[in-house]
Structures are given as C-alpha cells and as structure tokens.
Image 1: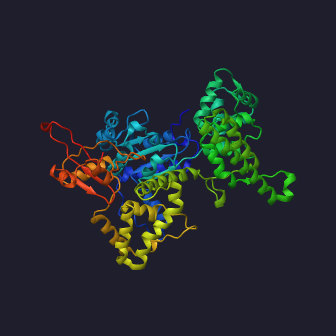
Image 2 (image 1 turned 180 degrees about the horizontal axis):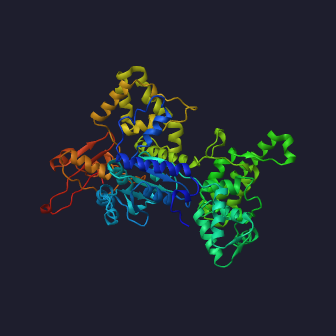
Image 3 (image 1 turned 90 degrees about the vertical axis):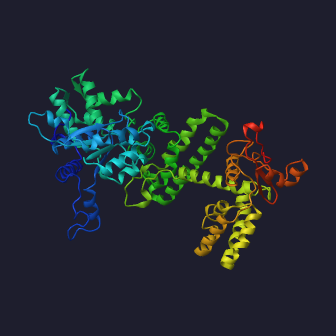
Length: 587
C-alpha cells in the first residue's frame, strides 16, 4: 500500500504541490533564476517577494515527523517532474571527502535509466539526501560540503529531515526551499486505514479501534499499517476493547519512542485532558524519558499553563491560582534539595523521589491547557529550558574570572568570590575613570594601574566588558568612553611591552622564539592552568640561589623577560654536540 501516485498520498497536499511545482520549474529553467525573480511584478511586496525568491532556491528541505510520507512524496514528485532519483540516506557514508569525490557525478551527469529505456530519452537526475539531520560523527564535514554542492549544483537536490529545529541543519535551511510536513488529520488517516482493512478482508466493526491505533502511533501512518499487518496475521477482526487490552499489557497506552520531550512533558505532566487516568508509575516512567531534561522543562513551562480549576476553587480563582503556583514552586525547590544529595553524595536511590517532586507533583498542581509553540499569547509559548544557557554563561564567566584572579596573585590574596564581589567593581572604576575624565591623556594612568596588577588587554576587556554585573545593579562605565580613546588604548596595549606575572609553558616558547633564541627548553610541557603550577621565580630568591644574571643569560644565547617582581629566563636548547640539555631558570 505504498503510494504510487500523488492521489494516493495522505495529507500535506499543499506541501506536495509546492514540491512538485518547484521540481517542474527546475525542469524548465535548469535551476537558473529568471532576471525578474528578485523584482516581482507590481503589487508583490514584503512577504510575497521573499516567497517568490524562495521558489528559486537550488535545493528543497522537507521536514516532518517520521511516517508522514516525506520520502514517498519526494519519490513521486521526482518521477512526475521527469527526473530519475539518486538517494543517499543514513546507511551511506556522507563525509566531506565522500561527497566531494562524488559531487560532480551526482550533480552533473544524466541518468542511465533514460538510456536503457525502450525509447532513449535524456533524463536528468535528482539527488535526494534522506535523514540529513542524522549525519553522525562519521560524516564529519558532510553538511558544509553539502551546502557547497547546493550552491553549484546543476540538478535539483531534496534534503529530508525529521526535526526542523535540529541545530545540525541550521545553516542548511538558509539555502533551501522550506517545506514542513505535518501529521495528517485523524479523519483522513482513519478513512485510509479502513479502506486498507477492507481490501485485506479485515473486519473492523468499530472505527474507534483504528482511531486508538492512530493515537498510539502518534500519527505515524506507516507504523499503523505495520500494526494492522501484524494483527491480521493472528486475527481477522479487531475492536476497541482488543486494542486497549493489548496496550495495557505493556503498562502504557501510548508509545513515546517517536515523541519529543516537548510533547512528553506536556502530555504527561501539564495537560489536564490527556492521560487523566495514568498511574503514578506510568508518569514516573515518563520522567525517565529524559531524567536530566524533564525537570527543567517542567520548571521552565509550569507558569505558562492555563490552569483548569475544580468547582470548589472557582469562586476564588485568582487566589487559588497563586496558591497552586506556590505549591508547584515549593515542590520544585524540594526536588533541588534531593537532586543535590544525588549528585554530591551519589545517592541514586533517591532518583524516583526526585522525579516525583520535580515533575509529577509539581505538574499536578498546575495541570490544565499546556503551553504551545505557536500562540498569540506570548506568555503561553512553550520554551526550551533557559537554565542550560545560564549554565554555559556562568561557566564561561568563571573561566574569565580565574584568568583575572591569576594575574592578581602577586598583589592580592582574595578568593574568586571576593574578587568578583568586592575587587572587580573597584578595579573597573580605577581603570575607566581616567579615560572618562581625561580622554586620551588618561591612557598612561590607566596603563600604569593595569601594569601594577599585570593586566594585559585580554584581562582589561574581561574586567570592563565581559564580567559586568546586571544593568540593574551597576552602569557600564566603559560604554561611555569615546571610541577614539578606546582605539588609542588598544594600540598602546598592542605596541608597548607589558609586564607579565606568569608565562605558560608554550607561551614562554613563543617568547623565546620572538627573541631570536630558537626553540626553548621548558621545564614543563602543556598549559599550566591550576593554582600552584605557574613557574614563579622571585628575583631576590633567584639571585640568592646562585641563579644566572641577565648578562650571563644573554652571553649564553638566551633571552630574559623582566617583570617588577619576577624574572623568567628562557634559554634555547643546546645542540647534541654540547652534550647537555637546555635549562630554564624559570622552571
């Protein structure tokens, strides 16, 4: 029952017609964009202009859930437009090198099928890249190479993916005609399934049985047909009770294998109309759909639910809503305490309790009409957890703060918290105030203060721009500095030698190379990031220990880099003939 013509396709009629029209235009124009495509006739402005330009894209991107007919629609439309299809899917290697090696063959040659037909016809090929969102690590560079192929292709290219919002196809979307398939309507699917059952001699007295299959398969028509085939092998009849009993055996009434976490979090924890009779064990199973992300989804979206209140609370609706939100927030707060014990003390036996508090109990207080992706009410739009983005930002700022703190080690003994809360605001004011008051004349004063703490341009930018507190707490002083003063300061930072407190191993090697000393012999290799790993040599201690002076180091062909309180000397490696290994007095 695989569709063989456009008439047999179920659902997405407008998308199928758009794909066919795009392919037919390719067949007529060879993919060349008419001169008037970018300047539509009078009256077509704004969105119409963009839509017309999209019609002349050199590739099409077909996206939608599994089983809705994306690949079948592509195959039918390719044949109707007079092309022969060449398909590459997830079972093929689609790395950069493989695509590059075959790109000229795939996108310029004509079809061999046309030459083998009874009447020899010249038929062009159409390349179909199925499951482009499934390009794995083995397909390294394949997406970038596919985009390059699209830019220079002489044949149409159809890319097929399941998830339009997958990050792996973000860059690809800019070069393709956007065709988003959706699940076909329930009545249309049920009608088609009843036709198939009748042709197979399958007795289905109650259409609700097929309707239940549609719900179980999440609208996947192909999956429902496979279920009917399996059922027909052991029985010639089906009713609603049989279907319900069959899926009750597995402990779930619906399969979530193909569902997204957006759907699972809504349907099982926030939607009052779905899974109303589900047991606690069933909802807890849905928590384990993704035990890391599910609590974050509930926390992000529970305020966006339009609650369904019981009759007893509707006379004090506003107060009841606030009380329920407070209980949900308290439950989420309690779950954080449990999660802390799980992560820090490895008490993984508490994971079910964490799931109940963070998802099942929190969602039970606010259940109603869940948030949706597309809503005219902004507050009701479903959102991805912002906490993940905050975690990334905090990690980056902690790294920048540690860099600033490392430079200050010779002048302060404060920890990271003290530096961030107490010292950074003072440093920012001392660095920026001369630039605001004196302009370019204040640059020497700013540089002198920066040198006293061994700050370079990178640390200066971190303090003044990257590590700023929220706007509600403090103003951005550096934003008020004139752009000409900023440019002059940058030139001074880059041209003049700066005082440094520590040199990383490979950084010292670079300094020795610039000084003309050749390759440097460093006591340690690799970056030294942790405290206590920096090679710090106090000038007084070095001289007291019998270390080499500047003149001796220079005579030995090395180079010396001075700082006010430390000296780091880098000596080139001795040649094999000298019978020794190079040393670094800074190691």
